[in-house]
Amino acid sequence: MGIEKDAPQDEIKRAYRKLARKYHPDVSKEKEAEIRFKEVGEAYEVLKDPEKRTAYDQLGANWKAGQSGFQPPPDWDSGFEFHGGGFTGDGASGADFSDFFASLFGQRAGGFQGAHHAQHTPGEDSHAKVFIDLEDAYLGASRSLSLRSTALGKGGCPEIKTRTLNIKIPKGVKEGQNIRLQGQGSPSLAGGKAGDLYLKVEFNPHSIYKVEGADVSLELPITPWEAALGAKVQVPTPAGKIDLKIPLGTSSGKRMRLKGRGIPAKIAGDFYITLEIALPNKLSDKEKSLYEALQQEAGSFNPRAKLGV
Amino acid sequence: MGNEVINIISGVIVEEDESVSLSTLCRCCSLPVEQVIGMVDQGIIEPLESKVTSTYWQFSGDSIIRVQAAIRLQRDLGINVPGTALALELLDEVKALRQQVSSLQRD
Image (cartoon, rainbow over all chains, first blue to last red):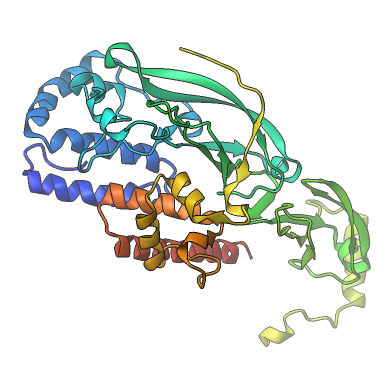
């Protein structure tokens, strides 16, 4: 948490609150925000209690030297369910602490949990992220998703459970949207309905397309003669190739819009093509002399006239 | 490690749900009605048609996500309902500005 070992309790509280705001997953745009937020919470859980703090000061060093240390699962972010609770505050449920802290302080002792689950209360909702390709948003797709979640096993020890879900990704989903899978969250501990599973959709970065909401854009290189003379060229789109007519005398940077060819959401997005004139790296002698002839012919054209030079 | 395979399941895109009733919203967010009404009073979410009595309120699908975010902010950062409303509005603004910056950087 970036504080001195002998920092007074109120300084710890201030540092914690500042970091909690900074890394709160609803606030922060940092990639690792969720993990950082959890780490900060765990650290505070220890530091706010003078007894635990002393225990950690003593054990902490040995733990670092002796053991391999706790590692979050490799693809934590995409496959790990996190539940609603699990954070410090009044009457913290103590869920979701990493193994190290759990084993050290037994945070997970079932007692707290019970209070939240009166009879027939539904199970908690779970949240996870699913990464898809842009093409999946165009066509729809199915994904097999392995979700690991922690649950209390026999004797109150946390156990990691894996379950595999085959999920249909609906066509037209946009980045940041949530898919609700009814009844796929945590089972109820008291005979009620299971909670829902919310999957937040993230797009894998694409090598050629950029996505903004439902709109998709592409930079399309064209030759100088295609720009000058007009042409019909093939353009890739996530839904397949299309033919595009480039008008006569097109300047570099011109943006063309194909209405409704973006992500087929309820209100379909548009597909934007930015034309970029590309030149071959090397010119042959003949090409060079042709360009020189062109220069002679079109010498009066000054594209910088508006700039006053 | 238990590993069970379930058949293909499909879900709904929460944000594109036509409308969600007050009771569905409460169920999806595990929140008592009074608290959701409190959020409406602070403008965190708005019913699609506000003239009808609360029993008949309908909300846009993304209200679920917004209320869930509000709950997390309140619980994790200890802010009250008006503070949450302010935080969410500012976050909306930041999001819009970020989008503007990235589209300006591209042009």
